[in-house]
Image (cartoon, rainbow, N blue to C red):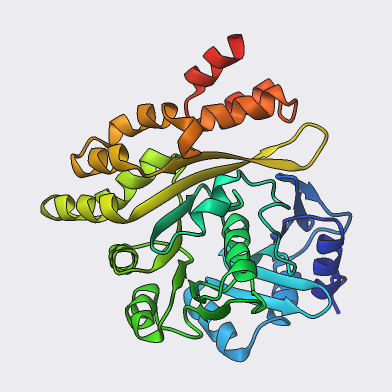
Length: 354
């Protein structure tokens, strides 16, 4: 028997308050605490150790899939411990694994100290709300808290399409239909196509990863549904360009028109190490108004940033620089961190000099 018990290991990861566990051969198990990797005080693992640990958690069908494709994505529930998003892969021929912890208790927007505008955005009847940022920037958590806010306050049918399903919501006022790609539906695009027959009020798309999914999401937002989705982009205006660029030149004017009429907001988020431990979410918030819709329609996305710097009192918009400077002034982050995470380092540098 290997010296490693994967279930005990995952229990200790949760107990430490870590976000991830990494198993890679020729090194000790590693956990991510407040964004930094730390080795666990255990012996180095071999490929055999990892295979034994990993295979104990999956079904025969998953095993076949992993052996055929050398990749496997799935969600795992360990009663009494928690839920995990897991990915098995190979490195130099050996099995390896990454586990991300998904909290069972869904945080509220207040728990996350989210900007007040988030509570306003979730009251919209229709349109598209995007939460973006690199992997590990807390997108799923922010979205779970937004859906939780709706669940506490409104009677809605909420369909989530994810790969794999992460946060599982208990039905409070709303009813959730959680659909995992691969288990409950063939693909994001198919699930969205059929969701129209499932009478949803709100649709959550785990990731807008291809043209078909983006198109289906925009159509759903235009036809009277509130659609939430994620993308791996780091700025709000950059997100709009990313969506447009998925389409060919002659389709772009129509897509711009769809975005202009259906986009409600883009929240671009990054998780920053906080002074004294823990992390804070810096967010750039774009809320579409008449002026911004026109800029999108007229292919002037590059002018959106200056619009975001303007009418902020009444719109709830903020640039990433403003978010970083607020944390810096409140002594939550260091000068170095503000510069390291800045999308516009020159702007932050200038602001730091005042």
